[in-house]
Image 1 (cartoon, rainbow, N blue to C red):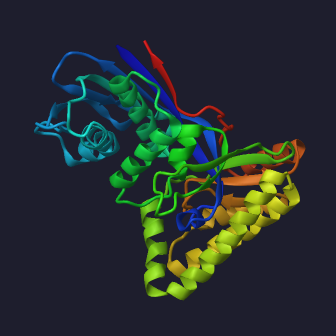
Image 2 (image 1 turned 45 degrees about the horizontal axis):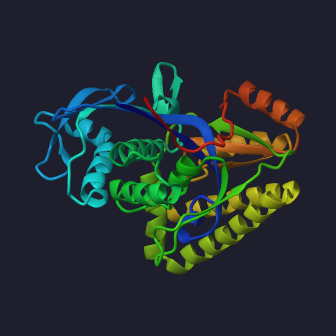
Length: 358
């Protein structure tokens, strides 16, 4: 039996950082996909390949209970590259199967090539949520293998969110997981502490006149490092932290309402204010959220009548320019390209995780 799973990446439209404090945020699933092929065989080992990550073939061994361990000789760098995959495998065995049985061996192929930008013979991550997408796709394939059924979205989100948080030190809102599970455009809020498995993601429709232009900043950024600096501000200056996040949360809520109602001028104004507040948060926390390159892009966008913000943690990765007409979007794209920036071809993917059993 062969199971093929695919899950889309994500692009945060509004609400990064504030979503970590429970505010609503806007996220779009996009047409970049993590793909998994699981060929189930009657064998002891589970052999993993991940060409995008430079993993040719590593055969995991049963750990004596219901999980998997690396064989001897696997380097720390290789272990790190497969960290999310092995965390997913061991969560399945220990938490979902409850240690009652071992997943079948076989061959597992992981593909995240869509999440990288090739530039001058150098591959760089775009910041589209590859770890969440591969976690969702892999977990969906494994659940199909052990249950014989396509996993129900709320259940898949609950498990995938827990796995993703475990793999990255119990941080993260789950917004990228939700986009990979459900697809489309979502108004997302993190589950409340008393209901950690609740999927709060309301599908929205893209306003017809709103144009989006994703722009590559030219370098990748470390989400963990940037979020860590912001969290340090919470410890050293809780009042200032609260002021920033109260305002970010207010703006994100207002932007979600304007987007849902198709009120484009109000949405664009909110995006601009949100970016300015992110810049102030970065200055106070020492996190270069709206970095110099993002400011240069923003100046170009503003001079053409649009608005701009980083997408995600900032620092590098992608930003988004918004404007109100197709003609303005074409002119703005041309201007960005003339100034040496790369416009990324992204569109909203309405379909979330998919499965085929062959």
